Length: 217
Ligand code: PRP
Ligand code: URA
Image (cartoon, rainbow, N blue to C red):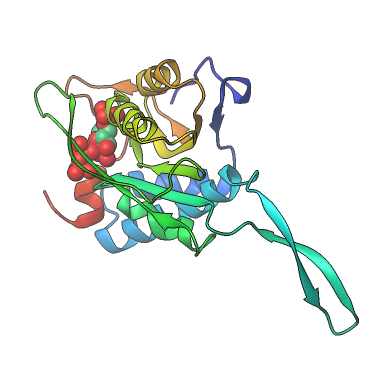
C-alpha cells in the first residue's frame, strides 16, 4: 500500500471508512467469484458515491406531514449524469443509481492497448444537455490514468464542466496523471496501492476488473 502527496485541498479524496477497506480486501481475493465480486463492487460504489455526492444541489418542496404542511429539501431533479467507462465502470452504476434513481446515464468506451497501454476510444454517448449536470465518471481501476484522463477530456470537449471521478483502486502513477491533466476534477479513491507492474497492472490490485465483473478471460 502507498500514500500520495495529495489531499482534499488538491481535489483528491481517499476513503478511510472501515467498510470500504473491508470490502476492497474481499474483492482483491482471487477466490472471490463473479457473483460476489459484482455485488461488492456495487456496494463500494454506493459507499463512495454517498461521500462524493455530499454537495448535490437541493431544492425545497412542499410536503404535508400528519401534523402540518412544511417546506423540505429534495435533491434537485435531472441534475446528475453518471458516466461509466466501459466495460468495468458498468459494474458501479447500480451502486450510484440506488442513491439517485433519477440520474441520467452516459457511456464512454475505451480499451487499453495491451502493448502500449494507451487508451483507444470506441464509444461516447452522453446525456444532453451535459453542460448543466454534475457528471460522475466511474471506473474501478485508475492504473496509468490514461483511460480516466481521456474520458474526462472527451466529456469536457462535449461541454461537461462539473466532473467527479470515482474509482475503487488507484496506482500512485494514475492519481498523479489524472490530477495533473484535470486539476479541477474531484477524484474519489477507495484505496491507493503500491505501484504498477511492467504490464501496467496495479500491484497488489485485484487483477483485471472487467474480466472479474463479467466472468471473461
Ligand atoms: C481497465 C480499467 C480502466 C483501465 C485503467 O479497462 O477498467 O478502464 O483499464 O487503466 P489505465 O488507467 O492505465 O488507463 P480495460 O482497458 O482493460 O478495458 P475493459 O474494462 O473493457 O476490460
Ligand atoms: N485495468 C485493470 O482492470 N486492472 C489493473 O490492474 C489495471 C488496469
